[in-house]
Image (tube, rainbow, N blue to C red):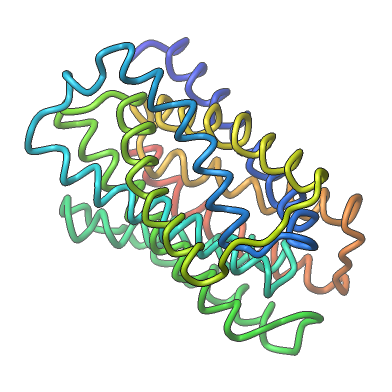
Length: 293
């Protein structure tokens, strides 16, 4: 693999992390007037309506192996119905910084799933990194946080598990050469969004949305979803899930800064120390994966 190809994939992933970090801020603003499942359902519906026609026009549906369609359905359920749907609900209950910290457990879940499905055994330094992650998270949540909610914590944790499953399953599918990044993004998102949209309608019904809300939804759908997920899957075709996980965890810093600037979310100074422990632990876990690969 050439250095330029890897560098391009890394830069694509870093751009996506910035777009997704801004999604947290825009979503928090949108949740003021829009129910969470409705917001995320419309966001991914717009993205699907953009991506699916593009994929069909390029003949991506003819490139997908027959036995890969059910796998795309599983990817859609994990990556969009579970991961994205529950993440938005988590943001409804918790501050964005807390949601981000909880999702920093995702790379550890990726490592455990890799162990289960690929037989990759974690090294001692990876286990030490996991211990740091658990220690930092325990310290962070050991005392009551402003706006902390147990329901939101559990929902967000399940969201992270869904995303970890999506990452590992997508990489395995790419290795089988049965689907392209565009086909994966468009069709998996479409199937996951269909279930998500039906759930939103049944649970929240139809409610009026102000113009400001539609502006947020359309931007999230076009840029932070359609474009971002295609770039992410394109980078995943080149890089390992481990490598993307460590890049994704830079969002912990990005979202914290954006939350302070735009949402006026604040934390006691010691909390930043605990966040740093989590970040260092995740980096140690992922660094061995990157070096080995």
